[in-house]
Image (cartoon, rainbow, N blue to C red; front, side, top):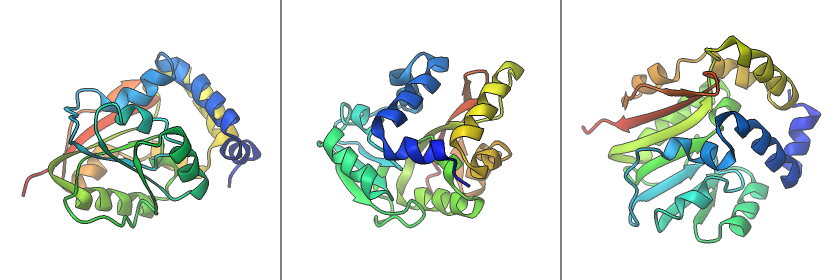
Length: 210
């Protein structure tokens, strides 16, 4: 069940941005947080990139600095409208992540930031399957999302944040071994990088060449 704070944060861009900036302090600020999953990627001007669940374009605006072929996908018409205003030099598609209207083997990189924790377990599995389908052989799926804190000091802050702004699916993600789940669908998964006392994980996985 969504909280009133969650509903308001999605309705008002200034509130969402403020929450994002505050939460990102633990990793050195919002620009760094938005680019955590982009580290060590070889992005060129012709790299085909999908920004999955692109929100209001918070990472899309960095991706277009690397590539001229960036597509943002989101199920929210409001988010797509905001993206088109905030980052006009990308292509946008309104669609669900678990049923993407793309051909097989289309993208070199699929990126998603702090979105998978909003998905029901069955949705999450379908999304991973779809990401595998639309990636080219050898393509990279890179993501950042929540992780059970390895430093106990971070647990109270994360719990309060979840209570105010998240739903039960965020708690479910904390119980999910994402690297293993990605491996189940055929990805070669690198060791996750942990940030903010272990409360955030960055995973970069590669579609195994068949």
